[in-house]
Length: 345
Ligand code: SAH
Image 1 (tube, protein in one colour):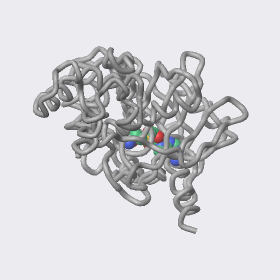
Image 2: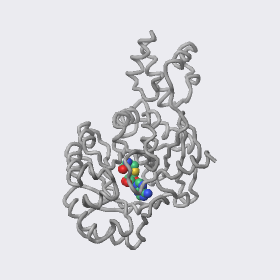
Image 3: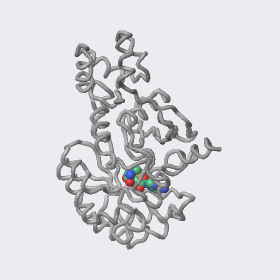
Image 4: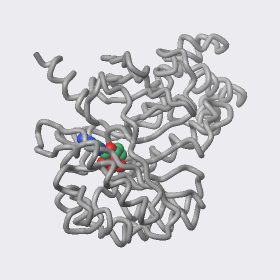
């Protein structure tokens, strides 16, 4: 069954036309699904009962249940573990930043990219998320917090560019002025570096921010951390990011997870500065969040600051990511595994 929450007004209108319904119903249904954010056909009170029943037999309506919620006492960050209709679990985070409430959402249940430091990939990919399931992560958060979300980062579990068509559809739907009407500029997509998809995304001419998970300044080191580095060199990956900037004018963001004794040396900082020298780019340093399955450790605060200063002195625009919700701390993808283990007990 097709998910109604993953369809545009035009698509709903066309589908209804085939059912012999008048075209104004398309906009009405889109409003129920994307603006009023209903979770059942029965709630669509301005539709005749027979149409609601007909919709129920032809379409599904993606909706998530909050399986677990952790609220930070320190800064209001909330971490959610959501259950999908088929019982799979995904994670999302609500972060009340000064510039606006930000939702960090998942694009896949699990992930098949295999990055060594990441918990999301430990059990591989279960499945891609539908656009409606990506939207629902945001809608349920707004309902739960009573707050409006103004920024979305697709940095939760999964590789968004490995679910390319659904990602693009999600962006189209969340920026629809009859729906949530989010600005493209307030959306960030983070990728481990699928080069062909980065080049394709550049051609969509969207005003979204692209973040590249670089984590190492050269191929040899990057290959020890991320299997994707076997497929694409640092050079061609950064060239694809240059192409993204050239096509969209959007400043690139490079993420660099600092791992003690692996990629936090002065030599790494210098090599990274050389790689990004003269580019309109921003480097985001993230002290690695250790997972028990791997022996990666975060550098101390002083070492992270030293790495930052080194880059700064070499002309690179760089910040250390502010840690949110330290009291409900856990690395990407860990909560989902934790809740899954508890459910299995
Ligand atoms: N697949 C996408 C988006 C999801 S991960 C990507 O690779 O970019 C979001 C960011 O968190 C990525 O930069 C990822 O490398 C990083 N990350 C994952 N696990 C981490 C951990 N344990 N500590 C620090 N950063 C981590």
